[in-house]
Length: 143
Image (tube, rainbow, N blue to C red; front, side):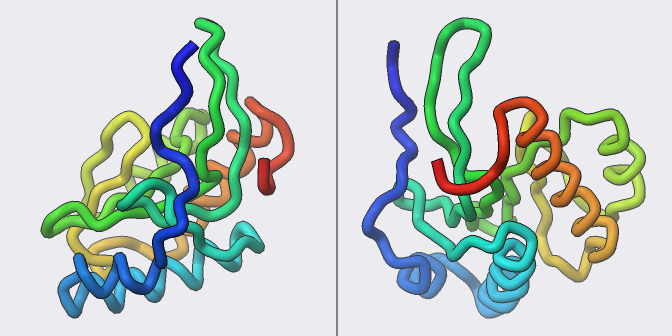
């Protein structure tokens, strides 16, 4: 069974942000880092070359595939930031409707600036993601 290629790396979070972020993105990354640290109680770790992750969990899909992933994380993707989360719980949909200007992938929340989002709603969404991940895969923390 193939393991995920995205694993914790020795890369430095500050170097990643300095190399990739615009001034606005850098400020938003600083705010995101404070929020994700507060919610997870974990310090940031680079996962692969471009994901800043907080905490981790072990997953096993019905197909048998297993791996480790960050509990929450974010990345700089061109002009957008992306937050990685688990929006698969019933109350997530109304929160996403109230969140502000964004677009969603399967587990990716894309936005241009934090100013486009309602911060209280974002925090609720992230807390719900942590709870959903714990429900599906066990207690959060470092796997």
